[in-house]
Length: 222
Image (cartoon, rainbow, N blue to C red; front, side, top):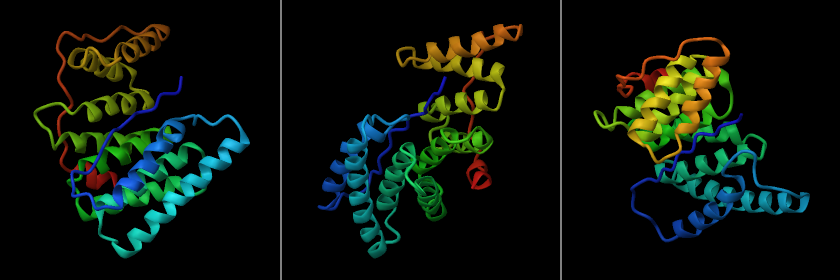
């Protein structure tokens, strides 16, 4: 079963006039290439989506060339390229990583970029799960002691993809307890089924504590 971590993030920065047009273009692409696999059924549709993607990417490239320190622009382009990776657009993955890392090199406290980079890693390759775990823990720093749902749910996948199913099971139990209406029962059942197939005992879930902040994790992961 292929799960995708979804992070909804926006910079709380002033919005220039051109931004609404770019945002609208990105939002129009999101239902089609915002998840994996992309919702593309024909070659003709693919050609249309690619043309739209390249148009907004070109606009962002031009704006960033003039404003290289604009973190909101970098985040928009990184998010766009993260979607481009879902349709296997050439170099989109590297472009997304570069943009998110550039943001964090300028401002390590940009939680949205931390979560976006962690999500890019966890959705791409199980070998990147350890780096994603560090980033999700780093994101938690900015809401401690209140659990950050995106960080805590991301940790489930980081544990699961690293093969630590018992820890993933406990994390799913925590998610289900903290956010009972957000569909985490499926993750809880899935990890429990894996443990049952392995003939492993189900971990005790009577005491559950959200994973805490690791302030050094983001720099280590980068």
